[in-house]
Each structure stands twice: as C-alpha cells, then as structure tokens.
Image (cartoon, rainbow, N blue to C red):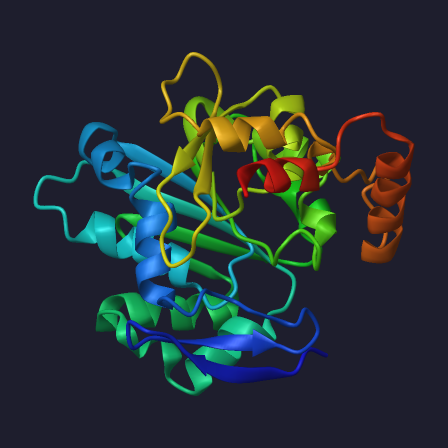
Length: 284
C-alpha cells in the first residue's frame, strides 16, 4: 500500500507525495493550475465543448481527480456549451481519490464538482443529465481494453515519471492509448522525454510542444496527421536522434518497472546513437 503524505503547491492547492514512486502527484507550481494549463487548455476542451454535442475524455492516471475536475469545470462554466461530457478514467489505487476526498483536498472545486468526485470515488460511476464519469480501477495496461477505439476527443496522459513508472510510457502501452484517440483528437502529457516522444511516433502520432509551466522543460501534445501542432524546438528535435530516444518496451504488457528499465538500458548500451550528454556539452 502506498504511503501518501500532503504536499502543498504554490497556487494554494494541495497534492500528495507518493512514498512508493518517490514523487508528488503534481508539480510544486500548482496542482489545480497544472490540471488546467497542462491538460485542459492544450486539449482545446472549451472549443470542442462549444462545437460538438458529445465530448469524450480519457483520463489516464486519475489520481486525485484534478484533471477530470478541471475539464468538468471548464465545460460547465461555458455559457454556450453544446456537448455532453463523457469521461473514462483509469486509476490503479482507489485509495488516492478516496483519501483526497476524506481530508477535503477536492474542496478547491465548486460544490457540484466536488460531489461528482466524491461519488466517483465511492461508486466508480457518475451519471447526470449532461455528464458521465466512469472510474476503472486496476492496472491501466489491462483496464484500457474497456475503452472503445477511436473514442476520445482528448486523452490526459498523467502517470508518474518514466524513470519511476515506465510501465505506462512504453511503445506498447502508448499504442493502446493512441488506439483510443479520434483521428482529430489530442493526447496531452506533461512529459517531454525523448523516449516517450519516440513511442508516440511509433504509434503513428506526430508531436508538438506545450509551453513550460512550472518547470524549464515544455510538455507534449500529440495528434494524428494532419492535425496542426505547435512545433518542438531544434534542441528537442536533436534529442530524438540520441540514445535518450530509445523507448521503453513491454511486449507482454505485464513486465515490472525494473524489467522494463533493464531492457531499455541494454538497448542503449548496444546502440550506435550518440549519448544525449553530447548535446548538453555542445549547449554549454
């Protein structure tokens, strides 16, 4: 069982520190702001809610529920919304949203949204007049099979970082995620890892950059061609031609984190690609 401790962030919201993964669930810059600026805004949730009658979101690694909450808040506040909102959320540890509710962390949202998060944590299903939220508990590598193909207008990909949770950044898992995306949908994630971006390329996606928020590195937005995306920088592109871009692999979708990391390290050691440190030296 993961030991969760409170971690205040700069925008006044509070997240958890995970003892198992040795990371916080959100950046110190602000948990609430991160959900809005790194996920909801780049995925153009507001625009889609104004032009579509149904808006589908896949929230990978639901956690405290902040990303889903930010999407619900965005849509519910639109005076000219057309869309009914449907969210499928994947989460491995039900204790996380339940504890966030028990100690009042979700009270940063409007009461109606707080109640939605509470119901989801209690029963894993919420259905209202213009919203449905289904919370699937278990290993996302297996539960994602319950998500229809080409279903999602937007996918929020928010696991712990690749070095600590490589299981959800592999070529094989990202292919499953991409299979759920509509041809004109957006996949957004905080990660700018060259290995993650290489896995996205392998899944047939193109990538773009989201401006840095609370850290030096940009985030990533992905979509199928020919959807236009903001370009990545020349420096980011250069990393895609180094050993850093050798992706994580999990061909059985059952490997442990240590097995996935060891396999990648072995591939890197055999590779003729330059090390990413060569780019950093040139930059200096």
